[in-house]
Image 1 (cartoon, rainbow, N blue to C red):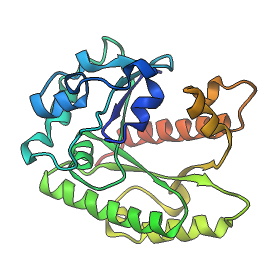
Image 2 (cartoon, rainbow, N blue to C red; image 1 turned 180 degrees about the horizontal axis):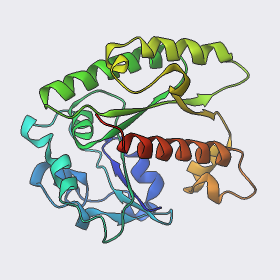
Image 3 (cartoon, rainbow, N blue to C red; image 1 turned 180 degrees about the vertical axis):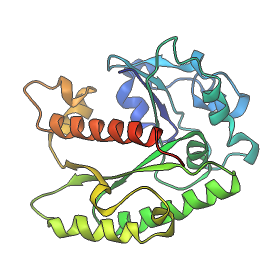
Length: 243
């Protein structure tokens, strides 16, 4: 599988993880900023990364928190013109900033599916509630076909501190939101995966590599493979269901 990753976060953490240090300080015209400001084609801005078969449209630290309204659609328009055969791209993954600003709106406008991570604490729970209301607002204002919500990911789950009941509590709270009541998600299908808190994630970030490339067999690999399979299975099943 070949993946195009799009970084829309001014923190540029994903850009710095995927690119060698020599490419961390790219000029604006070589980043996603050119797509927003100049409607630059996406393809010439794509860069190969430290991970085989993964391409990146990098972010820039000077990305503004607020885009002019007419620029919010530029990413979606650029992706609609992207040739997915040269290089071949099977999946496009858009990483957003934590805040619900216009950069995130631009990602929602360009997306078809949404995965929402939970850190299994109260601030994350409240933030996810705001995310569902935000999605509702973007879909209505932009007259979008409703996005398919693929499910939640329990991120940085700590088995030593968190009981299984916390997963059920957060799930039930999320499913009570009106936007999720209109989705395909059911209680049994809400969680896509649980990714535990593990020391090998910081180690991989420090080494600028994937956990798949760490020496020895990382226990996180099985969790990531389960998440990947869950996402692809759900995308494929949703693709053939009527809206």
